[in-house]
Image: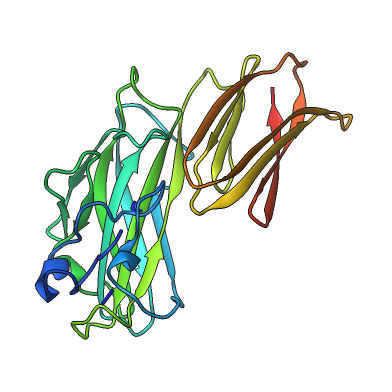
Amino acid sequence: MKKFLPTLLGAGLVLGFSYNVFTNSSGAPSGVTSGLGSPTCAMCHSGPAGTGTASISIQGNPSTYNPGQTYTVNVAVSEPGCTKFGFASRIIDINQNAAGSIASTSSETQIISGTNPQEITHTRAGTATTTPGSKRWSYSWTAPAAASAPDSVYFAAAINASNADNRNSGDRIYSANFIFKKSSPNASSLKTLEQANIYFNQDELHIQILPQTMEDHQLEVVDMQGKLVYRAHFGIGALPIQKVVALQIPDGIYSVIYRHGNKTESISLKK
């Protein structure tokens, strides 16, 4: 078989490769959760491009999290024809520190010993399919307490869909991730982009960029009359960017244009 973390939560995920076949079938090594600079299972496994899908989500799909509350995290993957699967996941803030705590809730998952931030992976029992060609794991996450809760947390997972031939080739590697915002009365607006969080807090524009690959990042803010009020070119990189900009501009609706790689996203933001 064949990197999140996360993630959606890394390298050498499931069933065979470094060390021996049994090492990864009973759990991924640490440091392969994908997202924010972490490698994926592709560090140890290789194969053709995946034809299925992978995701990491919170049960019930709430739009924001409440500090101190416990949530169920689901990591899911589908890859037709595969019979064995593995994953590794973690939950961190933009500075790559632990965001809350995670716990195993079944015999199919386990915390990777000695990891900080915590990482969770499959057990040997957790490699079998849920239904033919697909797999889902669940674990528990308790959000940070109010005093230390970040504005957003980053969920990442690395997932391996194995051909179960006891080799490290011919597998399909996936990574999955999403950003979960804190429910905060201080943020007058809160919007999620594909790889960024943007909101106004009084006269400050808060920008968090969480790159998934090496890409060029640019951001513009335009008022309703089409006047450019802020522009930033963050350059090419794969490291998190956190920036707070004081903007002396009137309350109202502003357009935010975020360009990363060959993609352009546009949102309306209320100040």
